[in-house]
Image 1: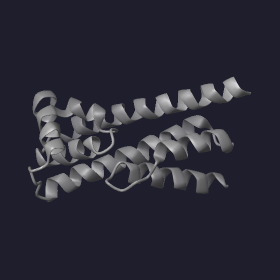
Image 2: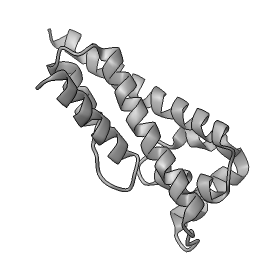
Image 3: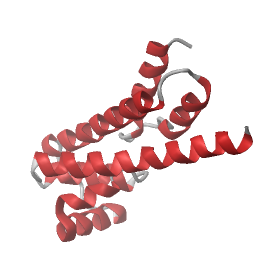
Length: 142
């Protein structure tokens, strides 16, 4: 697979994974780390960028679309955001709950800079952990 195709696939997967659509970005990221000759740091940057932009898309949707408050997970996400503010977006990488946090951050009109910062930080830490585990397992089995 060419570098540009690999990077495009990773970006698409990480973007979709940050929305309600399935993307399996961790699997794609780990697979590319082990199978392509692209620099790991470049794969990391592409995955983080795609996933953060996908999360910010949810924030935009939350700003323009009405939010229904009749879901138990939605209530929990709302409590987290009311208690911790934008810093709750450190958990924006969580399945389902992370999507809700992003949507509600938009709905609550939390400040863009802090939403982006905490979302970027949380998603970066997640991909760094995946990268470290993947690279450690490669060296272990080599």
